Length: 196
Image (spheres, rainbow, N blue to C red):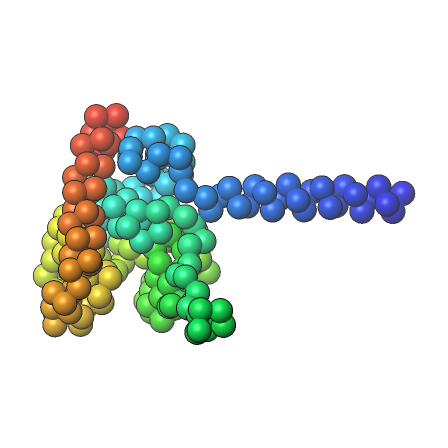
């Protein structure tokens, strides 16, 4: 009797682990906004909620998430190694869909009162993006529709953006341009499939 219970418990745990991993995996076609929301309708609901609350357009949210985590819910930065073999920890504390850093996430939790928010939860991640981009609009005067500059401020922080730290990073300027192009593409696609 006990061994049957044990076998059922092991199978249930394995199934839960498999299902949980799929929850964090990327959608199959990241180049098509309609395919993303068809495969993961709860993504669109979360982004629409953030748009209603904070004003950040869905396509801009999608483009930022694509650049930050490729829609992988438990994404982390790579591990750094010394001498090529000794692990020295991760490059930063960035985690989840939004790749929010620990301190910035805690600030978001404090200001919004959402203490249970989790970075690997798409609803919380999109709400965070809305909160952060609104701070950017207030502090740096960047419209919520300006995907390129919103992304630069998202990546560099508000003070870094004001200093123009991104100008010393040609690779980041290229990423920001891709974010802008992707936001436009996603917007066109969502309008075509009537999800906007």
